[in-house]
Amino acid sequence: MAKLGARFGITRYEADEFYRIALDFYRKRNLEDALHNIGYALNLLPYNAEYHAAKGFFHLEDGDVEQAAEAFDVALKRHPYEMLANYGKGVIAYRDRDYQGALISFTNAWAMLPDRAETLYYLALTHHRLKDNRKALDWMRQAQMALDKLDDKKRSRDAARWVAELEKQIAKENVLPAGNETTP
Image (cartoon, rainbow, N blue to C red; front, side, top):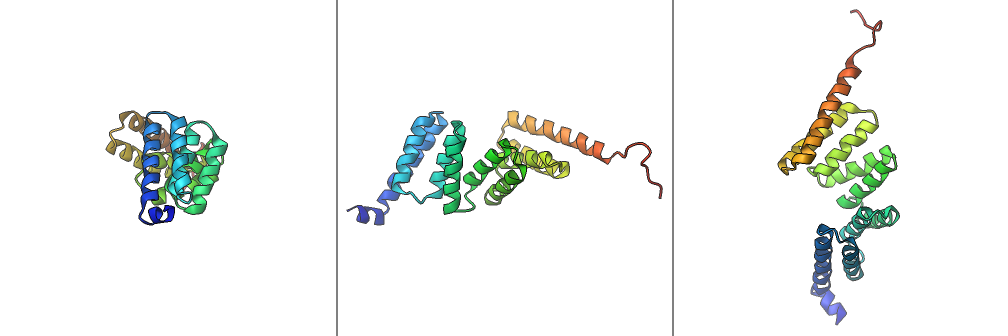
Protein backbone atom coordinates (compact mmCIF):
# COMPACT_ATOMS: atom_id res chain seq x y z
CA MET A 1 0.00 0.00 0.00
CA ALA A 2 2.90 2.38 0.71
CA LYS A 3 4.02 2.20 -2.91
CA LEU A 4 0.49 2.89 -4.16
CA GLY A 5 0.15 5.86 -1.78
CA ALA A 6 3.52 7.26 -2.84
CA ARG A 7 2.57 6.85 -6.47
CA PHE A 8 -0.53 8.98 -6.01
CA GLY A 9 1.42 11.66 -4.13
CA ILE A 10 0.14 10.86 -0.66
CA THR A 11 3.70 10.64 0.73
CA ARG A 12 4.51 13.97 -0.91
CA TYR A 13 1.37 15.50 0.55
CA GLU A 14 2.21 14.23 4.04
CA ALA A 15 5.81 15.39 3.75
CA ASP A 16 4.70 18.84 2.59
CA GLU A 17 2.31 19.02 5.55
CA PHE A 18 5.16 18.29 7.98
CA TYR A 19 7.27 20.90 6.14
CA ARG A 20 4.49 23.48 6.46
CA ILE A 21 4.12 22.69 10.16
CA ALA A 22 7.90 22.98 10.61
CA LEU A 23 7.84 26.43 8.99
CA ASP A 24 4.98 27.48 11.27
CA PHE A 25 6.97 26.40 14.32
CA TYR A 26 10.02 28.26 12.97
CA ARG A 27 7.98 31.47 12.58
CA LYS A 28 6.93 31.07 16.22
CA ARG A 29 10.64 30.65 17.13
CA ASN A 30 10.01 27.09 18.32
CA LEU A 31 13.09 25.54 16.73
CA GLU A 32 12.85 22.23 18.55
CA ASP A 33 9.42 21.44 17.09
CA ALA A 34 10.47 22.86 13.73
CA LEU A 35 13.38 20.42 13.65
CA HIS A 36 11.17 17.50 14.68
CA ASN A 37 8.67 18.20 11.91
CA ILE A 38 11.28 18.74 9.23
CA GLY A 39 12.70 15.38 10.34
CA TYR A 40 9.32 13.77 9.71
CA ALA A 41 9.18 15.37 6.27
CA LEU A 42 12.67 14.07 5.49
CA ASN A 43 11.73 10.57 6.62
CA LEU A 44 9.02 10.61 3.97
CA LEU A 45 11.05 12.34 1.23
CA PRO A 46 14.75 11.97 2.06
CA TYR A 47 15.94 13.29 -1.31
CA ASN A 48 14.19 16.66 -1.09
CA ALA A 49 16.91 19.34 -1.19
CA GLU A 50 14.58 22.07 0.07
CA TYR A 51 13.76 20.10 3.21
CA HIS A 52 17.46 19.51 3.94
CA ALA A 53 18.16 23.22 3.41
CA ALA A 54 15.35 24.17 5.82
CA LYS A 55 16.75 21.72 8.37
CA GLY A 56 20.13 23.37 7.98
CA PHE A 57 18.64 26.81 8.41
CA PHE A 58 16.81 25.73 11.58
CA HIS A 59 20.07 24.35 12.97
CA LEU A 60 21.88 27.56 12.02
CA GLU A 61 19.25 29.65 13.78
CA ASP A 62 19.61 27.35 16.80
CA GLY A 63 23.38 27.94 16.85
CA ASP A 64 24.35 24.42 15.79
CA VAL A 65 26.69 25.35 12.94
CA GLU A 66 28.07 21.83 12.48
CA GLN A 67 24.62 20.27 11.98
CA ALA A 68 23.61 23.22 9.78
CA ALA A 69 26.63 22.79 7.51
CA GLU A 70 25.97 19.05 7.25
CA ALA A 71 22.34 19.60 6.23
CA PHE A 72 23.33 22.31 3.72
CA ASP A 73 25.91 19.95 2.19
CA VAL A 74 23.29 17.22 1.77
CA ALA A 75 20.90 19.72 0.16
CA LEU A 76 23.59 20.89 -2.25
CA LYS A 77 24.43 17.30 -3.22
CA ARG A 78 20.77 16.89 -4.15
CA HIS A 79 20.52 20.24 -5.94
CA PRO A 80 23.69 22.37 -6.32
CA TYR A 81 21.74 25.60 -6.70
CA GLU A 82 19.34 25.15 -3.78
CA MET A 83 19.01 28.80 -2.75
CA LEU A 84 18.63 28.44 1.02
CA ALA A 85 21.47 25.93 1.27
CA ASN A 86 23.82 28.23 -0.65
CA TYR A 87 22.71 31.19 1.46
CA GLY A 88 23.29 29.21 4.66
CA LYS A 89 26.73 28.06 3.53
CA GLY A 90 27.49 31.69 2.73
CA VAL A 91 26.48 32.80 6.22
CA ILE A 92 28.68 30.14 7.79
CA ALA A 93 31.64 31.05 5.56
CA TYR A 94 31.14 34.77 6.26
CA ARG A 95 31.06 34.18 10.02
CA ASP A 96 34.23 32.10 9.67
CA ARG A 97 35.82 35.01 7.73
CA ASP A 98 36.13 32.81 4.65
CA TYR A 99 35.06 35.67 2.39
CA GLN A 100 35.95 33.92 -0.88
CA GLY A 101 33.82 30.93 0.12
CA ALA A 102 31.04 33.27 1.22
CA LEU A 103 31.17 35.08 -2.11
CA ILE A 104 30.77 31.82 -4.03
CA SER A 105 27.84 30.64 -1.90
CA PHE A 106 26.04 34.01 -1.87
CA THR A 107 26.52 34.37 -5.64
CA ASN A 108 24.94 30.93 -6.15
CA ALA A 109 22.04 31.89 -3.86
CA TRP A 110 21.61 35.15 -5.77
CA ALA A 111 21.56 33.29 -9.10
CA MET A 112 18.53 31.32 -7.89
CA LEU A 113 16.67 34.24 -6.30
CA PRO A 114 18.15 37.57 -7.43
CA ASP A 115 15.84 39.90 -5.51
CA ARG A 116 16.27 38.39 -2.03
CA ALA A 117 17.30 41.29 0.19
CA GLU A 118 19.34 39.24 2.65
CA THR A 119 21.50 37.78 -0.09
CA LEU A 120 22.09 41.18 -1.67
CA TYR A 121 23.04 42.59 1.73
CA TYR A 122 25.52 39.78 2.42
CA LEU A 123 27.00 40.10 -1.07
CA ALA A 124 27.64 43.77 -0.29
CA LEU A 125 29.27 42.99 3.07
CA THR A 126 31.37 40.24 1.52
CA HIS A 127 32.68 42.52 -1.23
CA HIS A 128 33.46 45.13 1.43
CA ARG A 129 35.45 42.56 3.42
CA LEU A 130 37.28 41.66 0.20
CA LYS A 131 38.20 45.36 -0.18
CA ASP A 132 36.04 45.90 -3.27
CA ASN A 133 33.95 48.81 -2.06
CA ARG A 134 32.63 49.73 -5.50
CA LYS A 135 30.97 46.34 -5.90
CA ALA A 136 29.93 46.46 -2.25
CA LEU A 137 28.18 49.78 -2.89
CA ASP A 138 26.35 48.41 -5.95
CA TRP A 139 25.12 45.38 -3.99
CA MET A 140 24.16 47.46 -0.95
CA ARG A 141 22.11 49.83 -3.10
CA GLN A 142 20.27 46.83 -4.51
CA ALA A 143 19.74 45.48 -0.99
CA GLN A 144 18.35 48.82 0.13
CA MET A 145 15.89 48.88 -2.78
CA ALA A 146 14.80 45.32 -2.01
CA LEU A 147 14.31 46.20 1.66
CA ASP A 148 12.32 49.29 0.68
CA LYS A 149 10.03 47.07 -1.40
CA LEU A 150 9.53 44.88 1.66
CA ASP A 151 8.76 48.01 3.70
CA ASP A 152 11.43 46.88 6.16
CA LYS A 153 12.28 50.31 7.52
CA LYS A 154 14.81 49.20 10.14
CA ARG A 155 16.96 47.11 7.81
CA SER A 156 16.53 49.66 5.01
CA ARG A 157 17.94 52.38 7.29
CA ASP A 158 20.85 50.08 8.11
CA ALA A 159 21.51 49.54 4.40
CA ALA A 160 21.29 53.32 3.83
CA ARG A 161 23.96 53.85 6.51
CA TRP A 162 26.15 51.30 4.74
CA VAL A 163 25.60 53.05 1.40
CA ALA A 164 26.73 56.36 2.94
CA GLU A 165 29.76 54.72 4.57
CA LEU A 166 30.77 52.93 1.37
CA GLU A 167 30.43 56.17 -0.60
CA LYS A 168 32.78 57.86 1.91
CA GLN A 169 35.30 55.05 1.63
CA ILE A 170 35.23 55.16 -2.15
CA ALA A 171 35.73 58.93 -2.07
CA LYS A 172 38.78 58.44 0.18
CA GLU A 173 40.14 55.79 -2.21
CA ASN A 174 39.89 58.26 -5.08
CA VAL A 175 41.98 60.94 -3.33
CA LEU A 176 45.67 60.65 -4.10
CA PRO A 177 48.06 61.21 -1.19
CA ALA A 178 49.93 64.55 -1.21
CA GLY A 179 52.95 64.51 -3.51
CA ASN A 180 51.50 61.78 -5.74
CA GLU A 181 49.61 64.09 -8.06
CA THR A 182 50.24 63.40 -11.70
CA THR A 183 50.45 66.12 -14.30
CA PRO A 184 49.23 65.57 -17.83
